[in-house]
Image (tube, rainbow, N blue to C red; front, side, top):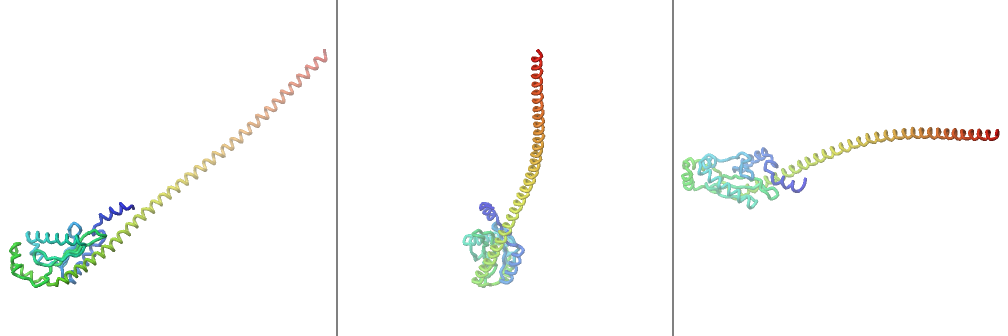
Length: 269
């Protein structure tokens, strides 16, 4: 595989190509339960690749459950993701509804292939009057909103930042291990293809060798035929020469006999 092909393959890699999403979901679920924070994993386009873990009713049922609140949440997610993409590090921020969220990018050789976003916690006791105002702005029942707010966990900001960093390290370690496995699988595939090509070439050589052997046998037969024909020709030439010699002798004898007759005639005269 040439460098151009390798680069093309790398640019097309998605989070699901190098991380087992089922395992990522299980890891995410247990991590959220252990830390008391919500989380969800998304790809480089912002589309979820896992189900949300430990999402609060305050966020999912009420804030994201209304049109205005959902639009504001999406805008916050976008800004948090952009910040994490820009720095290549976890970003901790306060969402429009007053909760603390985080975005931890999943980076592979400098390329962001996804991120884990979450949080949905408070870093200090809430000002309920402020949240009642937010409820009215987005069109949610303030009393129901406050009731859900009181169930949101309060976590120190330093702890939220530490949680985001740990999840970032875990996710990126997984991506590196997954990428190494991905490369090994492709290397194995290339080796297998090369072996198949070598096998085909060897079969071609074997076929050519058989053809050469058959041609050599045919050539040997032709040479033998030529030898046999040459032998016959030599026999014929020998016969012709023998006949010629015999003819020559007969002619010579006839001449001698004729000469002898002429001499006899002269003597008789």
